[in-house]
Image (cartoon, rainbow, N blue to C red):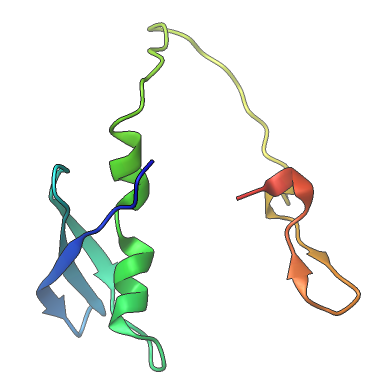
Length: 103
């Protein structure tokens, strides 16, 4: 998949509610209006813009889907501390993600 370049516009800011509306646009993709939090002190606006950017959504739009059967049911048990959330600490005290959780 190729790189995604997008532009953003801060359309509204509500300082009291600590949030803003950002409009994301990218050629050939759906324009998205997304509510985000305001940047924290020491954090750049671009950090927040990127964190909330609809990159995954845009990438998903070109994928084929599998349609489930109507009425299909199931049950999922999530452990109190799921494996995908575990972190292993290396001897140098630098956290690494275990091989089972490649991101």
